[in-house]
Image 1: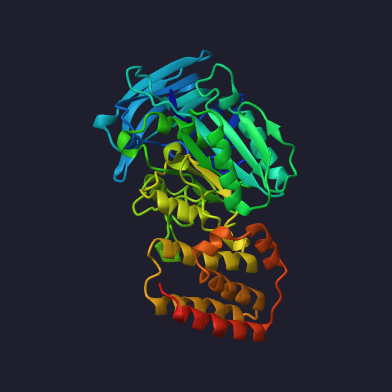
Image 2: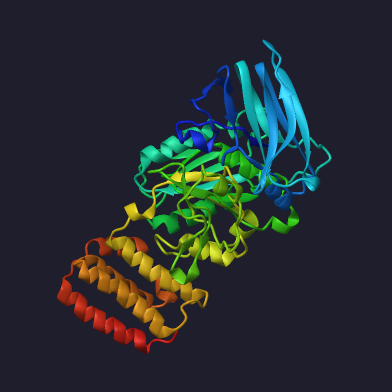
Length: 474
């Protein structure tokens, strides 16, 4: 089974240095990489390193085979790299005008670091079928079937693009090892898309119950599908991705050790405005003062590539891409937060430390581009609820002062609607979790959009809310 392909820039991400280093753009046609004469190319990159330490840690694989087919006059060097330098492993010499396959077995039990290839050419060299794979038929393989859970609201173009891409994947290619190993559920909260009820693709209409309600409906559909689904991938409707992310997720789960089989897999988020920059690899809640692992790191830099799969202190993955075992998802629904913090609470409820692996990621707009008064309301209310559920609110005065600082900043900026929404977020938090669970969130969301205020209304509501907060028990 292929664990990891050598992949190239595409329409999703054209940042060359995420894939290889060379003084020219390589040509990639019909699954063949073409390298000009008298060139040196290194595939030491975020996308194309094989992290032996990660695969050794998370799977029971003992041996991995590197495979490559080469045509032309040149040499392929297989190398490994750790923090302190490079080591040559093997060299493969191409034979002019004929395709030659080369294989090299890597003993994971006796190795460390990241494997990659370098190419030196005399004439034009062609490469295809380059990958790291398991060829040991005696190794136990888990029975894996993924289900994608995504919901959308009036983002028809994005969801149709992603659905088309997935339907052209190996999961829908007959006689491929991935065939029929993916179920796709799209919950349309806007009821704009045509409903689909195919064996492995389903699009269903749903009332606009927000992201949390949409993902909940998606889980209900997944539970009613074939009973052999092993994992659920929560994924936003507007992300951009490469299919390799799903292939690597599937391969990792196929050989994952029992010790890690209950962990989630967090797909990292790359920025859409600077596509070689990782916005985050995984999340640390930090009582609502969110911390991102690998925040805004340029993943073309050597030092960031070598530590790409370090996940110390990670607590959860965002639902731009996060994979959970069905064993957990079959009994756990998101809380009815409408939007924001549903993935936080779900991840904290699941517990553990999410796994991260290079090549499993999406590109997504970062949140500084998404802020508005309504978002401020949900951020305030839902963060307080999450902290209360997990006994993280801490000192009462500290919570109050943090709230005051945020609404004071909005007042200084004369952003009175945002100020009002953050006050209202605290007010609704104080109504308690029972109010949250019994509310009609669709109607309430519409009500929020119609809200009007001014500085004088805010000042009065601020004082009343503060008094109510001081009387509450935490």
